[in-house]
Amino acid sequence: MEVRKLKALGQFLRSRRERIQPAMVGISGKYGRRRTPGLRREEVAELAEVSTTWYTWLEQGREVRVSKDVIERIGRALLLSPEEHLHLQRLANYDRMADPSASPINGIDTGLRQIVEQIRYPAIIATFRTDVLVWNRMASIFLTDFDSLPKEECNMTRLVFADSSLRQNIANWDEFARYGLAIFRSYYDQHPDDPLLEEYVKGLCNDSESFAKLWQLHDVQDKKAVRFELNHPEAGPLIFTLNSFSHINGNPDLHLCVYTPEEGTFTEQRMLEFAGQSII
Image 1 (cartoon, one colour):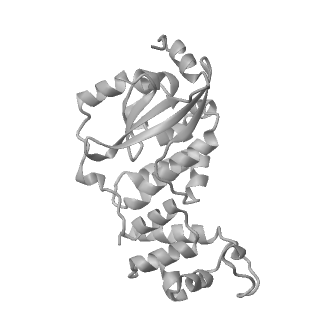
Image 2 (image 1 turned 30 degrees about the horizontal axis):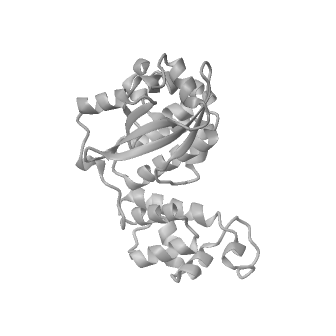
Image 3 (image 1 turned 60 degrees about the horizontal axis):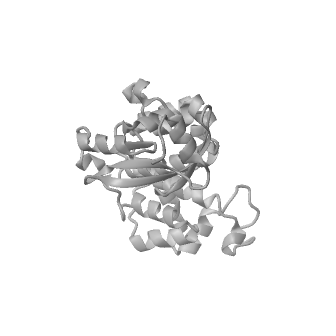
């Protein structure tokens, strides 16, 4: 496996191990007094029925042979969630994400731009790097003024963490930021050969203390419908469900994100009235 991916695998295993209290897996006092949080490597190795030396090498990011069965046993020993278990399998190359380099983005079809513009709610098309390639008028009104941003700054992860105005307006910022970063972390760990990611992450760690702190947690998630609460300075409180649609026109690196107003919250009425539209 690639060096950075081996390192990511080891860091992920360690981060999960340190979160588990011995009582959670029925262990108490077997290895004496504890000076660090979580399980010891010896305990994980015993639970997964592998040697302590071999598991230690795995956490250290060494080049070791690992079967899918062993990976699954380690996942069970660490009480991984389904998403974390899938991430572990991907890091071990047993369930790889699609490689975006196999389908490079050479521009967005005009038809896609027209479709996004016709959506009456805020909508964007972005890559798994969270670069925003297409947006409609509603996204510019309620998220950020994409039209005024340089191309390199049209990135949702950067905007959520580094744009002070947007951060102030997102009422559930902590929940939403953790979700977005966990998705991005999944992508980052699976693509060690992406030449832009390392520099991008270093830049964000320097620019945002919040990003740097959450990045060290190694949390991962797959995309799902998520709540997005916005305190718009003029339109008032707005509550959306963010839905994502992946694999656009056969390209695994593109996804459409639509911020759909939540029923019973007056969000749609406030949003459309502010935007100078009417509900049909």
